Image (cartoon, rainbow, N blue to C red; front, side, top):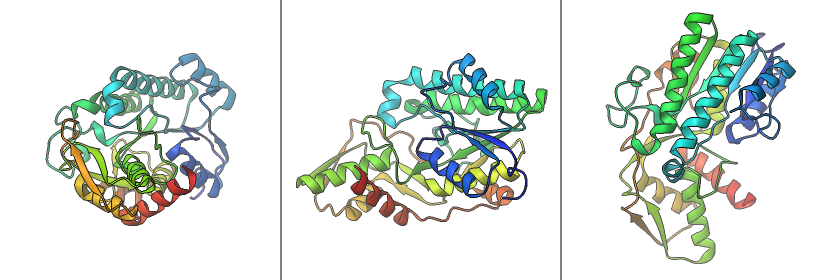
Length: 312
């Protein structure tokens, strides 16, 4: 890791979450000076006073902002107001508190859903403002996109080194498997495993199966975040991606096979597909972070399925 973080107090919001646990583990393994992982039961990050109290109590020098209010297509349809408010509020309060406290670096995790609904793929960072995001996830995507602008503005006026990372769809062990809020991979795994265990001969999935996504294993994302926190402080946003795109139909077939499912798949075409295609160009991550995803999709899926079978 080098000397930069060795004696630093690093605050990781969302440190108890799916991605945050892995990031915290990576930081601890590399000997970060002091790791601060505030819990929502103690500090409400949507409340400016709570955030001010957090910074007064812990005096962080580096902030890695992973906390987010997020979910799949269904959750985005049900909670557009909550998603845009909570994500904007958390980011704004944390960035302002960082400015007031003299934080050296603020690492913001964005979202691939911030990219335009339709456009040439793979999406490059320069494409971020070339159109409006897909409507079902637009409030969340716009919140994340806006926070990137806030970081740029604070860099130009106040000198806060703000880093904006944009990961592809994350997945892996310890993901959220609650069907009301989870994303596509844990939702499919849970449905196929339940079908196998229950002896069902059909599984119903949302959409047409034609939409495509790119997926990034959680450990790979954590490695990139730690690399950026350690050695990058530029203004350019950076995509984090695996370089492998797959349709929902092919993904369902693959997950079903790994789960031992032999029945039929029924696509509910009355439910939305979401964005037609989503793939990110990770060239900048390789050039600036010397990072490349290591875990292929099949390996990552097998690990995630194994975790769900043993922890559900």
